[in-house]
Length: 101
Image (cartoon, rainbow, N blue to C red; front, side, top):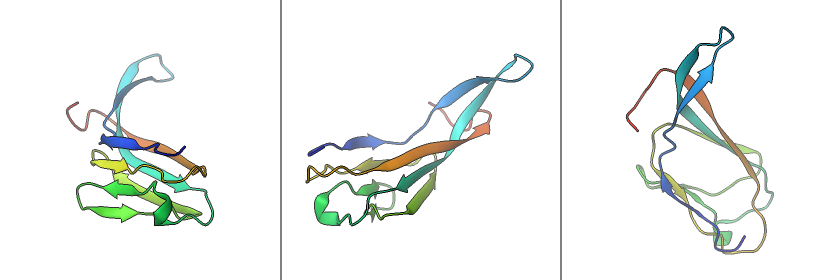
Protein backbone atom coordinates (compact mmCIF):
# COMPACT_ATOMS: atom_id res chain seq x y z
CA UNK A 1 0.00 0.00 0.00
CA UNK A 2 1.42 3.41 0.91
CA UNK A 3 5.04 3.77 -0.26
CA UNK A 4 4.83 0.57 -2.36
CA UNK A 5 6.66 0.92 -5.64
CA UNK A 6 8.49 -1.11 -8.28
CA UNK A 7 12.19 -0.34 -8.66
CA UNK A 8 13.69 0.31 -12.11
CA UNK A 9 13.85 -2.81 -14.28
CA UNK A 10 13.55 -3.83 -17.94
CA UNK A 11 11.41 -7.04 -17.83
CA UNK A 12 14.02 -9.18 -19.64
CA UNK A 13 13.47 -12.89 -19.12
CA UNK A 14 14.20 -16.07 -21.05
CA UNK A 15 11.92 -19.06 -20.37
CA UNK A 16 12.17 -22.68 -21.37
CA UNK A 17 8.79 -24.09 -22.34
CA UNK A 18 8.17 -27.73 -23.10
CA UNK A 19 6.41 -28.33 -26.43
CA UNK A 20 3.83 -31.07 -27.03
CA UNK A 21 6.63 -33.40 -28.21
CA UNK A 22 8.49 -32.94 -24.92
CA UNK A 23 11.26 -30.79 -26.43
CA UNK A 24 12.20 -27.67 -24.44
CA UNK A 25 12.31 -24.45 -26.46
CA UNK A 26 13.54 -21.02 -25.31
CA UNK A 27 11.19 -18.04 -25.44
CA UNK A 28 11.83 -14.38 -24.60
CA UNK A 29 9.47 -11.83 -23.17
CA UNK A 30 8.80 -9.60 -26.17
CA UNK A 31 5.88 -7.30 -25.34
CA UNK A 32 4.86 -6.17 -21.84
CA UNK A 33 1.26 -5.23 -21.03
CA UNK A 34 -0.30 -3.42 -18.07
CA UNK A 35 -4.08 -3.13 -17.80
CA UNK A 36 -5.34 -0.61 -15.22
CA UNK A 37 -8.51 -1.39 -13.27
CA UNK A 38 -8.84 1.34 -10.60
CA UNK A 39 -11.43 4.08 -11.10
CA UNK A 40 -10.77 7.74 -10.31
CA UNK A 41 -6.99 7.51 -9.83
CA UNK A 42 -4.99 10.76 -9.93
CA UNK A 43 -1.27 11.50 -10.26
CA UNK A 44 -1.32 12.94 -6.73
CA UNK A 45 -1.91 9.39 -5.43
CA UNK A 46 1.42 8.15 -6.85
CA UNK A 47 1.79 4.78 -8.52
CA UNK A 48 2.69 6.37 -11.86
CA UNK A 49 4.45 4.21 -14.45
CA UNK A 50 7.61 5.95 -15.67
CA UNK A 51 9.18 4.99 -18.99
CA UNK A 52 12.78 5.77 -18.08
CA UNK A 53 13.93 5.75 -21.72
CA UNK A 54 11.55 8.51 -22.88
CA UNK A 55 10.74 9.98 -19.44
CA UNK A 56 7.06 9.64 -20.32
CA UNK A 57 4.76 9.11 -17.34
CA UNK A 58 1.53 7.10 -17.33
CA UNK A 59 -0.99 7.81 -14.59
CA UNK A 60 -3.10 4.66 -14.09
CA UNK A 61 -6.35 5.34 -15.93
CA UNK A 62 -9.35 3.03 -15.49
CA UNK A 63 -9.86 0.54 -18.33
CA UNK A 64 -6.66 1.53 -20.14
CA UNK A 65 -3.77 -0.57 -21.41
CA UNK A 66 -0.08 0.28 -21.70
CA UNK A 67 2.09 -1.92 -23.94
CA UNK A 68 5.80 -1.72 -24.72
CA UNK A 69 8.55 -3.87 -26.16
CA UNK A 70 10.98 -5.68 -23.89
CA UNK A 71 13.64 -4.76 -22.88
CA UNK A 72 12.65 -1.24 -21.84
CA UNK A 73 13.66 0.41 -18.57
CA UNK A 74 10.72 1.52 -16.43
CA UNK A 75 9.59 1.89 -12.83
CA UNK A 76 6.43 2.49 -10.81
CA UNK A 77 6.63 5.44 -8.44
CA UNK A 78 5.71 5.05 -4.78
CA UNK A 79 2.07 5.22 -3.73
CA UNK A 80 1.22 8.30 -1.70
CA UNK A 81 -2.15 6.93 -0.58
CA UNK A 82 -3.35 3.86 1.27
CA UNK A 83 -5.98 3.29 -1.42
CA UNK A 84 -5.27 0.12 -3.42
CA UNK A 85 -4.35 0.39 -7.11
CA UNK A 86 -5.40 -2.58 -9.22
CA UNK A 87 -3.78 -3.73 -12.44
CA UNK A 88 -3.12 -6.89 -14.40
CA UNK A 89 0.23 -7.31 -16.11
CA UNK A 90 1.78 -9.89 -18.38
CA UNK A 91 3.90 -10.53 -21.43
CA UNK A 92 3.69 -11.89 -24.94
CA UNK A 93 6.54 -14.29 -25.63
CA UNK A 94 8.50 -14.82 -28.83
CA UNK A 95 10.43 -17.96 -29.72
CA UNK A 96 14.18 -17.69 -29.32
CA UNK A 97 16.64 -15.60 -27.33
CA UNK A 98 16.03 -11.97 -28.31
CA UNK A 99 18.56 -10.29 -25.99
CA UNK A 100 21.33 -10.94 -23.48
CA UNK A 101 20.40 -11.44 -19.84
